[in-house]
Image (cartoon, rainbow, N blue to C red):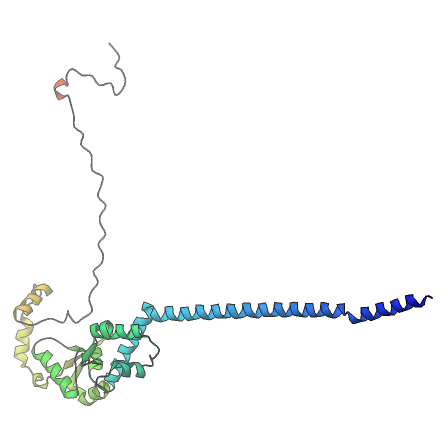
Length: 286
């Protein structure tokens, strides 16, 4: 074989070996896969950031909603009531209330709303020099204050006091009521709520039998409840209807009115004997 051709063949092999075409394709495929992985990671990170942004926006919307605000207010009022019933009647600042109720994550708008509107206008909260306390219906310090209140209601004819109002305003009310014992009278209403009355022991006396007979001999059948109420009001005595459960009056159904007959005006009355009636057809001539 020609030696020149052999030399050219050897040079071709060397050039072929010096140019790694396969390796370049692998590198290209690896770079492509790397780009794809990178794009997937970028998409996942972007979706994660969007999800976190949406969740953060959702949290913000929840915290700024009206339901969240009034939920915080209800929690604060219930806490102030509970601590008042336990004997902690001193006032607290808003920061102390938020700390004790674990509402430290509310924003400045909610704090401003609590200070300027919610707590100030709440009937169960009292404001004193920038501090807040619970305001019960009857502010009772001890059992003697409860007895004075019941005695006053008895003397003025105001009746009794709801047990719920006593428990709301008297710290450690269960213990105080237990100590008072027979000085109180309990009456249960039809709606299962209990009312406290003062047991005036000066009124516990025996009545003569002759007087009882005279009392029972007076007829009261002809006197209805309305007349009795009018008489009590004239004497300055109020009945217990105001403190009792309110009766719901049944809704009266409207009666269907019958169809009214329409009256039509008649015309040409002066021609009554001249005109003929053709409503039943043309009359037959005789």
